[in-house]
Image (cartoon, rainbow, N blue to C red):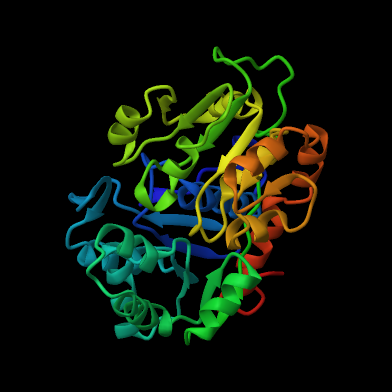
Length: 354
């Protein structure tokens, strides 16, 4: 049972817990991605508000690597320990964040015992499967997701456009749970310098086929392409694009300085449901270049802080002229606390959002 991270000052000032919340997730540290960061920030805010949060994660369990993606490890037969956790913790609400082995076990327990639960849709799982296992029909994966999320009191999604898309596929009880950014951590650093020729074009995220990183690496751009992150495609892409800088995953202040020391943040994905890294880049004063698809359109809309174009190279060059001050000002309007309030309002607990 992993406790929610919370600043010491918040924990000391928090009142007795108002609600006990269990978050079940197959995605957790040492993974570094938007799902993990979102759940960590949720726990921090809920703890600061006086709620008690526990995570059921692969940490401390016997796990096996996910085929084709060994960085992701799935818990093996976790149901018995989950049942014990639920019995001992007596959560006021259970939120199932992922559709892996832990998520499946938690769903089975809740359905069998008649325990209300909520779920969330963080990753375009059908498109992820198609990219890695092309012979599996995408309709089969959507049928699985309809079954998985169908019993939930609420299925939380990050944006209105994703909500509309999933409703058109038959999903019900969809609620908005948006994403925010920690503007105190992610911030401009005037003296941030990186040891590469400028302009520096930065990508942060998983280096995997579904992220479309090669569309960025193949561009003819001056300066340096900088790749922060790891994943199953990293070794292959590093061999094919030796002029790019692959520096591995970064966290904390090191990650912030990579954002702040770059010139443009490039987001080549066409399938992300949101793209939290775009908000982190904007908070660091970094303009965004991306395709005009659902994730970037939902995050930045028509705000003059990003260059969106079907020609990604043209988008990159256009982003160079965007004001870094405007990027930062835009991010300041996207707080995590507002997102946490949305999450609470979606829980099947009377008065949870009060």
